[in-house]
Length: 161
Image 1 (cartoon, rainbow, N blue to C red):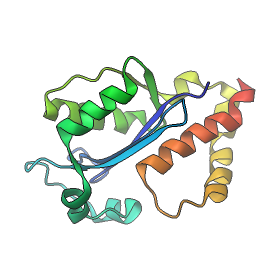
Image 2: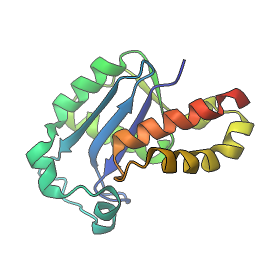
Image 3: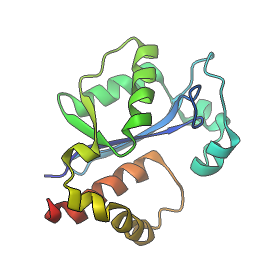
């Protein structure tokens, strides 16, 4: 069985950044992705981050969901699972920011993908991921694409466990 994967895109790369999109690739093959409407006090916006994820601030209000709705949906999809991230050191704080702002507790655990990888998987991870990036040719850097890419990289390397 494949692990469920969660990935965030954010307003920037630093301390003041906040989540603007979340994507999930579930172990059953289902995927979920949504933009997130930021709180008024979340004002940090980094043009270099926007260049990477190609999401404009106006897109969030136009196409996003309120943070409470996002948290409830994630809780419904991920209930009682351990979900993995390849950028846990940034994704975990963004998850905490999102849930704290909504006043909701997650019903799942977020862990680093490295915790279920073997040393052999880690040794070839970047190379395999880069090959899959070319294969999938997503075109845009989005949270759901990243989640699927992480899951597919795990799938392609799991024989090394």
